[in-house]
Image 1 (cartoon, helix red, strand yellow):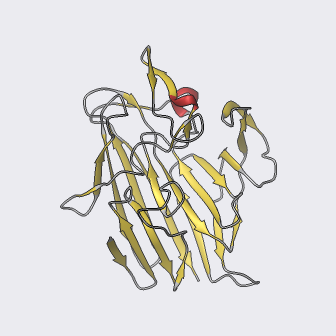
Image 2 (spheres, helix red, strand yellow):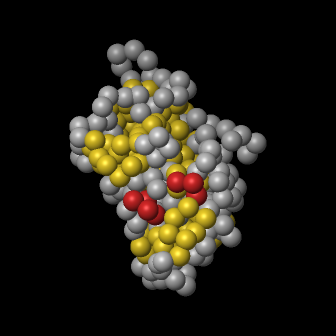
Length: 258
């Protein structure tokens, strides 16, 4: 584990467990669902997702006139990229790095950095093409432990079809939750208030330069608020193309009070 500490917070990062934040303690309260290497890597901590986030329909997409197939990892789909369940290496500057693995047909690598102050944690994630252009996406999947109250609003939500995937059509305004859905037009940062009763122990504000957000608040033990650079199945719906020397870089900032 890599331990980062400030006046009010302690962060544990596990390079071995997909380069995830394994623990985030603020004002003495653990904010994340914690786990170990033997637990399902999809369901604890806060892990990076790249070179795609969310699901790729049936693990299939086309790019530059060629069809590609990815390993099926959840139900009938490929999910959450190739880096969340593999060890990352620790670089001399303290950042974490990983190649995108043999199952990703384009090569490439990713890097992430964590910057902690007394008031906030900034997570920066980038994905780079090595030799050829490729579609790319980044995102984070934090599992915030209940009890927590989420304040969230968005202009639009992606419609889900019978396959549980975005159809490409936007619903405006979004229907009320609970959700397992992707949103756009999130102009007000999501806020999570941890604790029970009228006074929250910790208030966490989440900001990002990502323009898509997935909210999964159906579990009884956790709420997931996931900034992403594109929608699920982005390789087909809204591909973002990177080239060697021109990476995709995004950040997520967790700022607390309490």
